[in-house]
Length: 419
Image 1 (cartoon, helix red, strand yellow):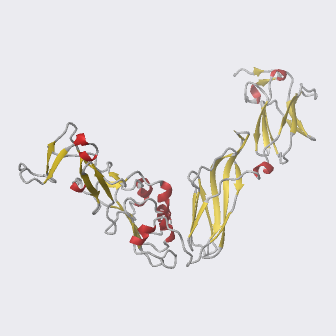
Image 2: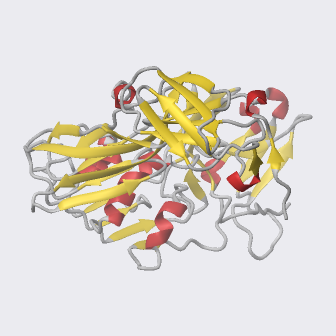
Image 3: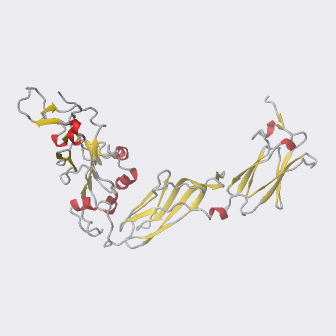
């Protein structure tokens, strides 16, 4: 038999916790103990009194949960025990203000950014939704599309809403219900509550002008007029590997293919040097398989492509593994063949267009570089042969890529050369 605990009520300190339209009051220092382990002499009941209400619990308890406190005011609670004859213990008293609809109506979640094309819209939040007044836990949403069908969804971390099949020029209302834990004086209350904040906006017309995030890329694809009407027949877009954002995909409602390899449209960027007598321009030309975008593309910038994939609005995506760092976002669509991973060779030669004399950095790095000298020893598998003559104590040369790129170390893990 477990030993019963005997604690006198007048030795205890009442502890309170505030919830939504309720409070919890702990009555014993020892914590929350089952009634069958509490011994208080002849006490049989626990009684809570406040306002003109009297709540009777037919056992001695270590804590009470008082609900139905819908009015935002100071409640004075009195808690005591009674024996079978109605004799009372010394009451414990505390005054509390519960969290109610009145307090909830004074807080708000940061409003989303709204991007709208004539038939679709994206709502996203680029900042943390938690604040000093609340902790964000998730959201649900609903809206009605142009067929009269109610669309619903739920989002947790990184909330984002993609709404499709909307009518150009209509006023759209998306009901958003945030799940939040409010805070009082910086402390979270006990309960998660629902905070309703609808988002209302006007849809653009087909001839409305949109502001592209990557206008030069769109121009390279032959697009010079930035309206939904002008791009309605575009079936394919090509992006270079150094693209910053895929946001503009959102405006194209009839795409079949997105090529993220640069294709034949884009050449690699260049970088120029003019220092210590060294004048050189490095890079340029066709894309080299060992190069990738410098740094991973932020997920928020790639999510526009994921929206199209998730809603079956694009049929093919060509992608070089690890080239943009969004492989984890595209992986769910690889097995179906919608995302085609472009194969690269097992080995790739670094062209001499990236070679530069170390003298550009410092004069004591002086070196002579004689490219393709013609009298080198015979050998198999030799490419890009050049003769090096050391002219100073720190004689050096380097292979330098333009600032938009870095080596694709996930695919090519070793650099090999012969001396």
